[in-house]
Length: 66
Image (cartoon, rainbow, N blue to C red):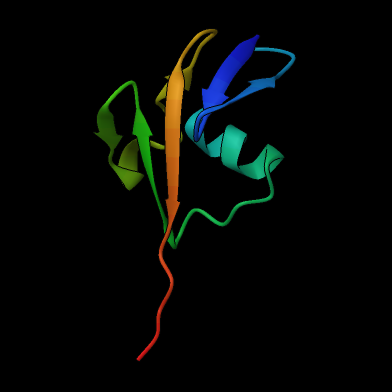
């Protein structure tokens, strides 16, 4: 399945949850925000929100600093 992530088309083998996608991409779920098809996905829904072919995803990393 093809999914657009941060403007780049990526290919994955099968539909998966947001949490599974983050795991496949080696991204920690704690310090990021995920937008799926223009809607913010609450962290509590990462395990149940499914990603499907042609979805558009934006992933933002939070970076601390001073």
